Length: 321
Image 1 (cartoon, rainbow, N blue to C red):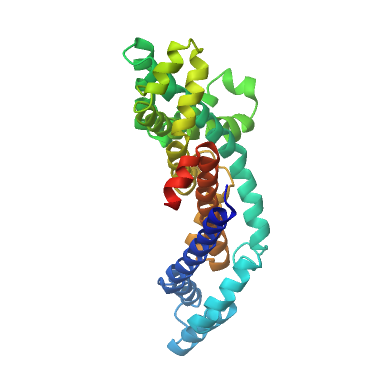
Image 2: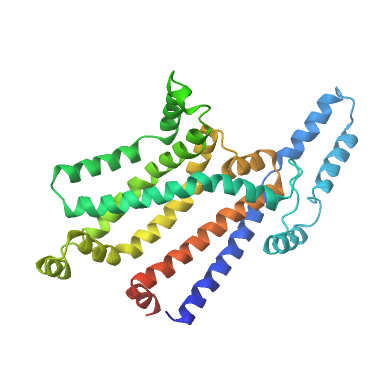
């Protein structure tokens, strides 16, 4: 693999991260700050109208000054970029702890169920897609496709509610105890996998259908190669687009499905933390959680490009032409 190609990918990734960080800062900084107005309104109610307009304005300015929001926008932007790139993300206004420590702790809690869910979805989706394509027209292949449709069509929040109800049933609750491992690890991972499984199955079927009829596949069958060896060679030819689509799904799940799962199962993960930061207008915490999502998305895309180029050098050659 050419170092120039890799360097180009890394350079593009760094530029993308910088642009995303800048956009995130502008969106947060220019959005109406409802938290400050809420704080002023709360103080006014507490005083039962005893504060005049100048005193309320003084409270507003004190709130902004305590959070560094009264400085010029460009000064705040430069300080923000410096802090983000050096991992000096400040202290949460509402939780009173370093943002880096909070994000690291909550991200670890999210990854406990997210990583097993991703791996399970890839294993089932890719193998199911290859199997249903190779056995197209059979009942078993139709059953796999129906399973994918059901996994995609049934809402995650409904499945989560069903799982929580099942855990409380007499007999089941006694066997699993408090069920923390079931409701915090196993159930979220399985539900996460159901969402990703459907898309992985569809992607793999779509890509492999164009390959299974190729001349080299018929040649492999004519040589008498076992079906699993043929499947490995077919997968090598479709790994690039499937990997790219998986990374796209990964980011979508991180910023959408994770919120649903963590609220349904009361998991103190990254989704709950970012929601708290948005509601409380905790800018250091909000920007810190946003950075994690941006970096995961960019790094994931670069990693998928590199992995696809290793598995199929034609991918790199097409880009370089």
